[in-house]
Amino acid sequence: MVRFGPFSIDARTWTLTRDGAAVELSPRLVEILAYLIERDGAVATKEELLDRFWPDVHVTETTLTRAIADIRKALGDSAEHPAVIQTLARRGYRFVGTPRAEPPDEDPFRKWVTGRLALETLDPARLASAQAAMEAAVAAMPEYAPAHAGLANARVVAFEATRPRNEPDVPALGAAVRAANRAVELDPRLGEAWAVLCIARRQRRV
Image 1 (cartoon, rainbow, N blue to C red):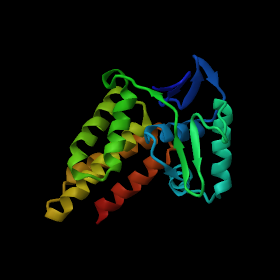
Image 2: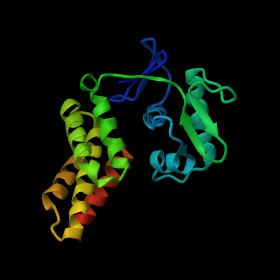
Image 3: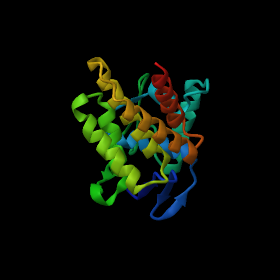
Image 4: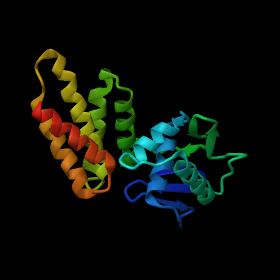
């Protein structure tokens, strides 16, 4: 669960609530909002958002602009005086609200966020912690497709890290395929799951 102000996001269903009451916003837009929040104030570029949330569809920046406008409308936020999402001209968007911290052990979603952020640093020293966080997220949320996709990504990276030593970790690659397959089974619409599944399968043929 991600909370900020009177709002809460349940990442298992990608639903948004305000003071416990449901807010009408599509799951894709809730996921975009959650992604901006998890970046902890860092800018998400327009290209990054388009590639992440419309990976296999040719869309223009107008689509993203409309999506951000719809999110702001649902939150009662203002583009001119933002309290939640700030626009940076010609660059992208960032979250400027104040999330309410949750104790990590009490919020499985935070385990997934921790693992995801560790992977995105591309720092080999954080790979073990990223895998551990993703494994914990899968154990706590076994029906949450992004957790399985994240675990698959972590295991693909683990495999890649062993290739320069000419000792490829083949079991890690097999585990990546299994995790990605599970993510696809849980949510066939999840682009990240299909992407990592393709990568893992391609690596097995190399």
